[in-house]
Length: 335
Image 1 (tube, rainbow, N blue to C red):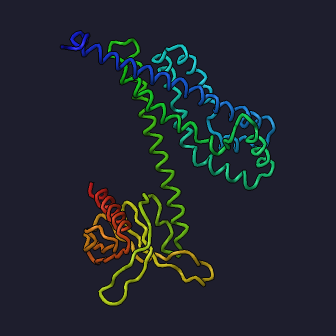
Image 2: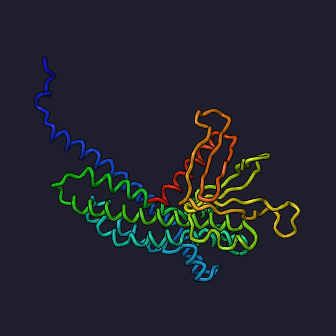
Image 3: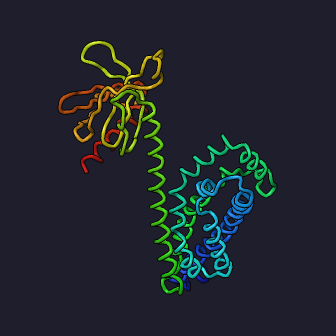
């Protein structure tokens, strides 16, 4: 016998029911997380930004560098939340989208914000005492200011996931389908821009660090405008004699080989002298051995028009990472 009701189920109705369940679940999560987000934004706006403005503990330029458009982002959340609480998802998110530029501005200021916080905590005793006092309030629980500062960028990622899910589970005949679809697209585009900004900031950090490790006249400006990929010790295997350890810095367009300065060097101990710069656009890469996946590492052969490098790594996993990064650099120069 057929189970009762089995023949009466309609696939279209079942799909609509699934959409509605997922939509309701996503909408509830968006609402609940927005309430918590707004609460945390308010803590920083009230107990840090507002009081710092009133007391003058930080100069206006320092305060702006630390918090960026925080209060404007807080205001945008205050505008959005009543729409969500009223179930007006499409209308609320459509009204929210013009504020997305604030998140791009916030991301562009993120590195400056981190630097300002570190500098002020280090040199400004009054600010350091103020931060400890505010963080000790029961409203903050165990949260610290440095934990709360990345909050808008974390929330943007949540917006992207939740609004995309909300749009995907809203039927095309729904009154707010177009509004939600447009909002999901705009939020996704903003998230991509913010991700690109973050990647560039991380790369700039790497470049400054690497530039600080290089010394000598040849090292000036070597990292400018490049994308950092990897660094580490490899053994250079010569045609005759013993392998020599060298530090290698791989960028998107060049491989830099460096030699450590002597430990007793008066001014440049702990730095590296540039010995060669190899263009990745002219590189041919081969793994000589190390294919088996054993623990013994292997050899990489890098051929250039006027030179050939044979590099040895005694760790198999590290060898594979170098091979992968070198392959990426070579392919990026040929595209």
